[in-house]
Image (cartoon, rainbow, N blue to C red):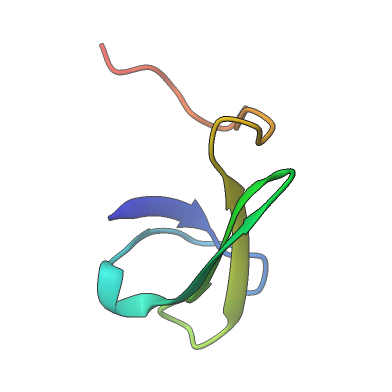
Amino acid sequence: MFDSVCTSCHRRQLIFPSQVRSLDNSERGILETYTCWCGSEQTWLTGAAAPARDDLVPAA
C-alpha cells in the first residue's frame, strides 16, 4: 500500500495492492502502473534509482 496524488482527480489517496496493474523494471527504477479510485490509470516511478519524491512530509 502507498499513497499517491492522482494527475486526473488531484486527490491524495491510498493505493492498495488490488489496484496495481503492473510492475516493470527499468534502468530508471520500477515503473508501477495502477488504477486510481476515480478510475484513471496512473504510473509511478519508484525504486533506488528513481528520483526522490518531494511531496512527502516526515512524520512527527
